[in-house]
Length: 559
Image (cartoon, rainbow, N blue to C red; front, side, top):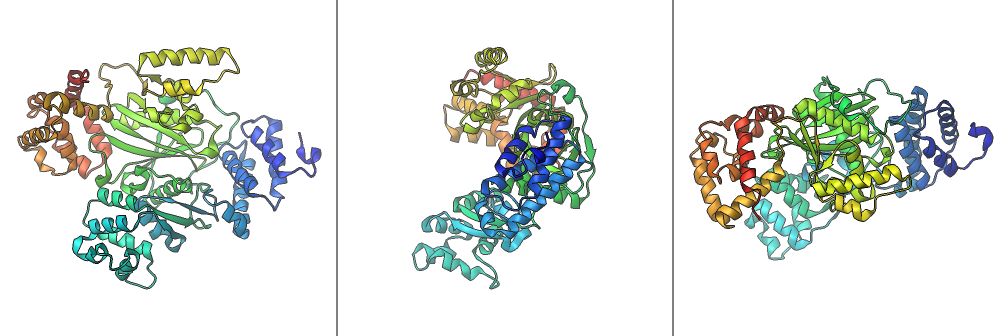
């Protein structure tokens, strides 16, 4: 249907509604209709707040899932025009605060490391809106950072801290955000403790997203040719996809910086943040090309922010170069806890296929044979997971509950969905189904482990309760004494070794392994090296894996 003839003065709302309806359809006549609608919309100069936001999101979707190169280019051009409209109409731009669209402002509370980076990159485009910590709390935080003597005048109430801290300015151009960043940055406290204190300050900042700043609508400059669609694949063949090997794309440091920056800003625009994206750097950034226009960057963390036992590798997925989804995997031996968050603009597309491709990437890069999804991802204490019925996306991909009774419930629900077209799983049922992990086994192997770092946390609790009657002091004396007996482990004095021995040093069974299993190299790779090498080495530590299996078996019935 040619809407230009049918509706010569058609209104924007009707056009946007129709574009939304056909965004996932790719027949010849629907492709022609999309072009007609986009042409009509491109001739409109005035949109209200809701219209322009909806249009922007539709353009992003169409750019990720274009019918052909003409539609891709049309969507890209219109995205730039939307940005210009907001540049020209400040009132409209202000009404779209926190939309993440170029030439609007986005505000939020972010980590110290991210705020420091934002301020360095964008200077006065980043401003403080408010500081949530009250006077007493702020003084306590400053005392932790600077010591009692410098802050005595504050503790006695002689001067307000916001006036006092201005004395640390080195130029007239420095504002309170600059000074706070400097005070935190120069503190001798650990980075983890500084982050906790920064979070306690509850500093809300605003970022002005001008045309020079990457946003959620930006794309990777080296993404390659566009992938055009003939359909939306809602039922991917997971086993086939898991067998597809990813292509490693070599990037120079400048390209890695670009992809890290885009990943950070995409999350900022949605007022979100993840540790791997925030704490990554070019040394731990890798980029892979997958099929159907998907590319993924895997991001490891700087040593001082790493998990001590498992390895948290984050990702940002790009469709035709635009950020479309993010998440991460927590890897221990050949097991990986994983999840996905598809950005709202792209829902209704190929979320299942994208996640299957990401599973395949982790499988091949890290030799993963077991994937698990935490209860939170499917709705445990997470209303969004329930509303989106996230459980069923994972179920359709082959994930199954680790609790037999919940798996039986899921199977019954699945039959109802297949046999009754209008049937929808009740919220109460989805909430029940979210009470266990979901699991996907790539292939049945005797070597496959069925535990992750959360199970080791429970193991620690059970050992303390059963062997030490809950007495932490006695337990920790035991593990420190046992740790001293392993001279090799003492070669790396850091929190990595300390955390490992929380389990190893509490268990008599470990003493049989001390002379057989060297941990030096593992600790060094965690503390200073590349976690990809750590993961490879951990795969080789079969006796260490068997130790954990035996411990978990011995303590699994502890109440």
